[in-house]
Every structure is written in C-alpha cells, then in structure tokens.
Length: 198
Image (tube, rainbow, N blue to C red; front, side, top):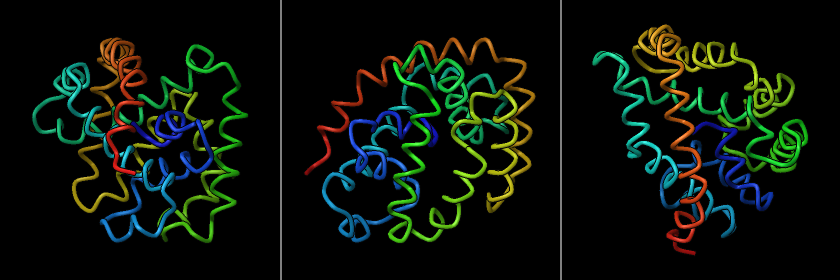
C-alpha cells in the first residue's frame, strides 16, 4: 500500500497517521525510540501491513500478471495503483470526504514538520501543495507517481515505468485482485496492530 492507504488504515488518531506515514522513512530500532509509543506502534504496523500485502494471494496473483523481468518492480506499481482505486471509490470505503481526510493528513504533517526525517521533511510541503493524496482519484496519478518514483530509484527506474503498459493491459484483473484483497486487509489491520509490542 502507498501513502493514502497507510494513512487511512491509521485514521483512528493523528499520531497513528503520522506513524503510518513515517513507516517508509524511519529505519532501525534506535530511530524508533525517538517517537512516542502511539507513533512507534504505527511505524511498526506499517511494516506489518506491507508484509501482509506482499504475501496476500491476490497481490501475488496480480504481480504474476507482469513478466519475470518486471515482476520485482510490479509491487511498487501495485501499491500506487491500489491508492488510486481507494481514492477513486472513496465513498465506498469511508463515510467522509476524501478532501477532508487528505486535509487532515496534510495538517498532521505540517504540525510535525520539524520532527520529520529529512526525506519526508523535504517532500511534505509538495505533498500538500500538489495534493498528492487527493490526486490519486485521477487515473493519470498512477503514471505520474510511478515516473516520479522511477527517478528516485537507485537503479533500473526505467523497469518500473515499463510496468505501466502491463498494468493498463491487465487493469480489470488488478482491480478484481484489489476488490478481494483490500477488505481482508481492513479486517486484518487491528490484528496486525495488536501484534506490535507497545
């Protein structure tokens, strides 16, 4: 899952949202100790959610739609596309508005900006001014996000971009996989969170 889904799964508190977003930016046990317990729990939960997602049979089947040479990059693309599907069909998953939720996420990032790790500190203002999370409702957001991620990969970013036509050719199958997988992730999230030591 990407930023939007991680934040949404942590919507029960602002500290949890912060922790969910930090999951891709805070590394190592000692760095975890710098954060209050609710944030630390959600950082760890983010990693549990990633492992659950990567091991889910429907996600594995969706990755298998990509040729061998691209499969290792397909997971990144699927994370982004799943955020698009969540945003596009937001009323199905959440009773509030997507705009209200994204405004909350951006406020959380603003309020904690000075505490953010350098990479997240640098991109947080862009996330808000360009409305990265709200933009996910547009299909074109997937292409834009993937091209941006590809430029930041240390090697073979072009392989990630090569995944885009494969996604477009298999969009219905990927959406069906998401429709089966995401409700199961929602149901599993409290258990995954409970497995994190306090």
